[in-house]
Amino acid sequence: MDGYLKLHEMLESALRQAGEEAGMLLGQTLAASLTDSLTFSKAAYFADLDDGVFVLTVESREEYPGHLYLVFNLRDAILMSSLLLGIPAPRIKEKQRLSIIEPDDVDAFGEIGNMINGALNSTFQSSLGGKAHLKLQGSKKYVPEIDPLSDDEPLPNGEYLMFRSKLEMEGQEMHYLDLLIPLELGNQYDPPPEPEIESPKETSVPEDESSSARSSDGTTSGIQDSSEEHPAQKTTAVAGTTGEDMIAIFEDSDEERKQLLESLEFTSFKLVEASLNADVKEIFSQGNVRLAVIGSEDADDRELAVCIKINAMRQDQPIPILMCAHRWTRTAVLKALKYGARDIIIKPSDPDEIASKVKRLCRLSST
Image: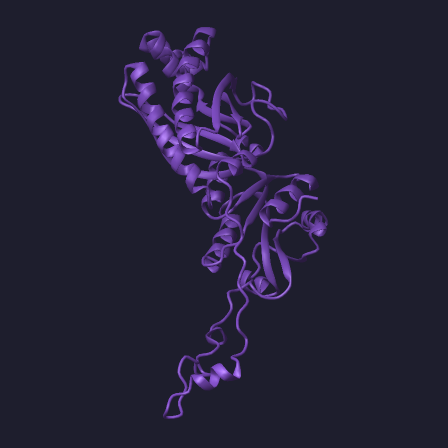
């Protein structure tokens, strides 16, 4: 994930401290180490979720208003709350197997959550000049195909920064703690850099300066030879960086390709469509590619290969890639993001959802 270096450093320190302090509460050695950071939509995160999760809601107050979410694997939550309650190991295994979390577990895990929130709060306050305050609000369980997934539950729809921390405890099998921060709140904590404004280049040398640069033997100094004046002319432009702004669409289905074209007309960019087997370099030669959209039935190796080709060709000047598929697994989501996709969409896609993602990825006005 590009940028957010300050936020990454804050969370790396806070989560390490949170693991140590929660471990002391449990009487165990618990390590929480930040391993990855990605951009996700809620739909992508919960797509085909295999395990249940336990979500803690944290309110961010003062000059950074909003909410962020601590998402634990449900089995980890049951393990830690049970250890705090002194429940025997066989019973813990049974509760994990059946995804049983009782009122006592919720209360006990609330204590662990307060410990973790305290570590986050102290780090955020020191890093943000005391202008942020985090308060743990509540928790909820979500088990796929059992608990309802709505626009607001177990967390609101939207775009999130996900910071994943590996949890490790001696003698126990543990998973990850995911910290989900809405994109807007993440941009408050760690604002993106202002775009650089290029200074105008000199196109000519005043006559008096030109003459003063001549040496006594009639040669000139400080002025490049014409053979060196335009080195860019000696190199081939990177594919897809010249010409009219365009979006490249790779999709085998004629009907779904037509739907994508209609959904992208609002951009006023040139829209170039092709099949998944098309020559990527040839497609990119038709303009300045601002976005690549890859559509398919499944997010399989064939579709990911297109993603890999685009990134290999544009590794020095990467472009955002949006992948759309009817069927996603959690592994496929992570692979897509690993191979260069900036976001995903679950088909059938809603034009408003596509528009929202395209505006963000292409930095277009939201109006």
